[in-house]
Length: 347
Image 1 (tube, rainbow, N blue to C red):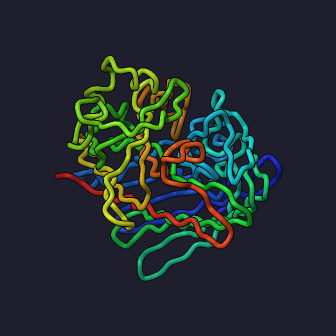
Image 2: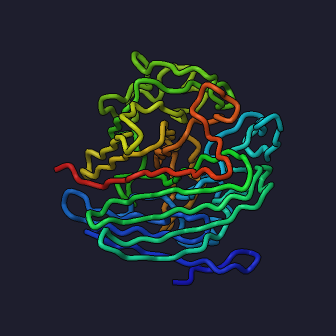
Image 3: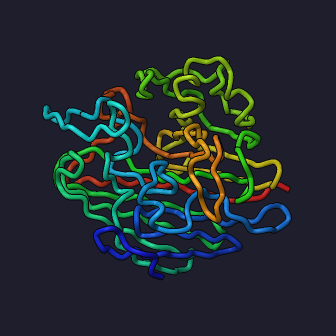
């Protein structure tokens, strides 16, 4: 259905997917997920995604609620990288660094939508053409993102891209979750497991140092399910730099297919979120920069640490870090990635 228009008059559509008691609402502007309704242990449906009621409120959104991120998720150091001997300069929109594709990333574009329904569930295919030089990135990139709500009520996100010239690509989904539902406050009581033995420490501008550091013996050890708030305020230099958790974990992978990345649980409602991905990393962000100034759906004020993000990805600043898994895409090649969000209930 129509859902407003951009400042330059482009129409925005709202798409609603429903399967097995789960409902996902998204719009063509930014590929943004506006809401995800899932049942708690009593069967009560509630919205577990942070966001706004109207498209217009997202135009001023600096928090990236629910967006598709591209061309490059996370940070690129000093807003530049060198590829095949040529240096490319990007917008510096996060201090001296470039964040989430620049000042006008794919989260601020209107995607073309083709809804579908098949034997596996219901969904929508979103497509976008990013011109050569878009935000300083080389190559014309044709991007496709498919959201599928399966018959089982799982949300599957498939990413696909091709390019006309060598470039870098790193796409992700940036939903803020609160499994407590629309009236819950902070997420510090949520329990989290991240399937990773290592993480990438950052400097004081949140760029990885290049080290793959063991999580053992640190507040970053989520190999067994631990409350998000259990160690978040410990005296730790990395926590201080991120104002909490805002780091990339190096996932323990098995082969090239889907691997379990993380499991979050809200003990109060029983809601669970299990994430599997083909990506090598996941960014866990604990909503540290939410400060009570964002008024969301139905007038809800989003307080400090009122939501968390689990962004499947290649590592931040990979174009400048040769030891990290490559994010280079060349003509004739294909960027392909999948992440599955499985919603459940713990009785």
